[in-house]
Length: 283
Image 1 (tube, rainbow, N blue to C red):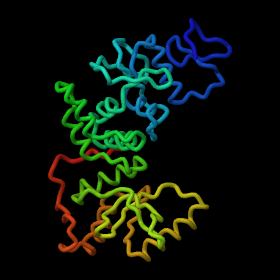
Image 2: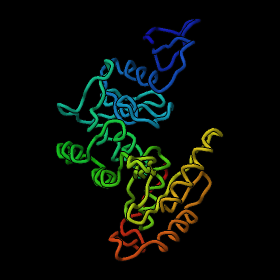
Image 3: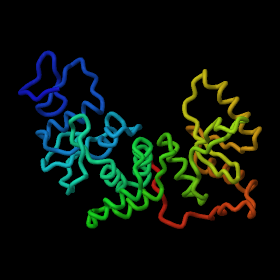
Image 4: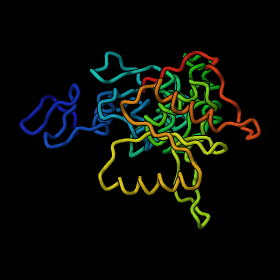
């Protein structure tokens, strides 16, 4: 990738005055580097692109590249913000200036709640970032917009989520009044070691809820064996797949919850409705 004055027979313009070899597959990494070069190497990479550089999954190749930069009038799919950045909030990854893990979480957590929690889930799974560390950083940005959204997102994120769909399902259950489900619940085998891990659920009730993604044929046998074992040791297993609608999902979980819940179990009863503003689950 290079800066130049015009395209050639072997290069294509990826951004104004930024060129890439025609043989190069342009993905998120290439777009991120191009945006930084467009800034005259003066910007800090932020947002979703920064989270990807920190190792977070589920960041689409076509996501807008966010830069903290004094430059204005960015090209298409590049966003510039003239945000204040303090000492310790920038680090280098492969030579690129990137917002620190905590600063990246601070930026991501101030968006719409569903998308923000999904981004935080992925970032925390990759880095182990802690809510307290993000809140400590936020104390230096008291007049920044979105602090309420950030606090709410930090109260909801969970590094146990393995995909945006799992985040979506977990938030749906919370929004429907269920106590916050535990994630990555270990199910022990006869040897006393974890044999399987459940996406989410309530261990006290032995009630699991899992999102089923696209299934390969060679995985079918494993899933049957897993399901049989879970039933054998007493777990109730609610499986959710693409195309299942929210009312149906909630009704299925509610039916099993009402069947299993007892006051003596010690788990918080389900609330009749979510008391706060509705969660925006568009993730």
